[in-house]
Image 1 (cartoon, rainbow, N blue to C red):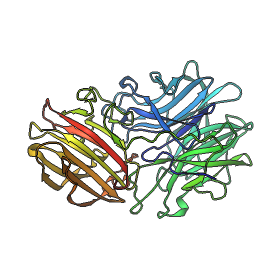
Image 2 (image 1 turned 30 degrees about the horizontal axis):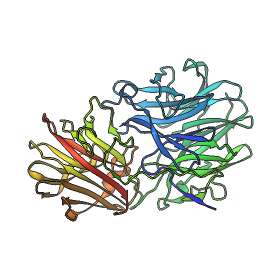
Image 3 (image 1 turned 120 degrees about the vertical axis):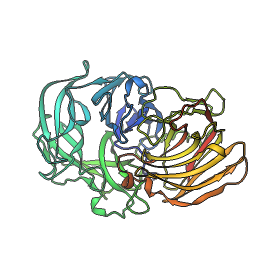
Length: 514
């Protein structure tokens, strides 16, 4: 039988949530400080996913200005009910707005509503259940008042889908598998065969991550934890296991009656470090004694499974090279842009980035467009037509973990190309060279954690710039936070006013050295 490979969404796609509408499946993930927010993917077979766009793609929907790295959008949930799609989410540590909100749409590929903020809903990681009795329910996680750090509980209130607000009294459902458990979160509530199943994550989002479950006969409880908890974890497999940190699951039932879970996990490499962030995996689920059994037969998230009993529907593979005939919706920005600094029409066949004073080292929106790193071994390159007009002007490639942990490969004043590593806010010049006039080509390559930079002029062959460098500086373990590496095109005047621009003729990304 044919098999699919995990992860089904490689690269930084954490906190997946999924729903089905007829024969179509839709999935959203967290995006933190990136704009547009909450990518929405579509699949017919749960294996092949295509990007439809983003739930929050208008500045008015997503106030991310000044938000810290790994702040912003946490843990969305998507649900479908009577022709309407609902996404609920939490905006964390916003400088203009924070808290829980809901948006709706009748077409997930179309325009989503402005957020309806829910000041009456405390906590984070919200979810919705549309019950068989016609009532709708909101669940979320919050820290236990007066409890120790990380001690949380799941609460429930009724949700009015017409008024888009919480109503009625509050019920505390569960506080985890023991009095010592921490970070019970990501609560998703389901009604299965007349019983209520509360699926949660527990243990934090790294090595101790897990999936736990509790059940009840009534939606308001009491909920009893399964004696089999955790029903999924990899923490007992050791840090050398190729898949780690499994948790934050959401269930979906296909139109043919099969159950699956999407969940996050990591793929460490070069030791217990991971640069790709938390990725989306798909595992089969069965039911026994009223509870879910993840990955029957092994109890682990495997690298491959038999495909679901659904007609296969692969989508066209994205082109490895972006020639900028249009602006690809896969590109993202750091935080919400206040102005348009990019164009693919000013010079057809090129992405033009205006040089602005903002720097990628700051908690701002620099002139940068970024995409996820999706392979452990990868190559990324660009063609750059740019003549700096001042001593602070530069443009080129960046490997970004966050503002304080990244690597820049930039063409600057005097046609000098510099390779700079920034780790915990400290910068080191790794190498420099000088290029002649004309189109410059810049490139990063990585085999595992061994990274290197290369440069070329025109159609000449690539030549290494400096020595290989260790990519672990870009890992979550070095930088903290919740995101994976993003690879981007960047232009800056670094604090000085500028009327210059940089034209990128192409961008190429792929697995291996290419």
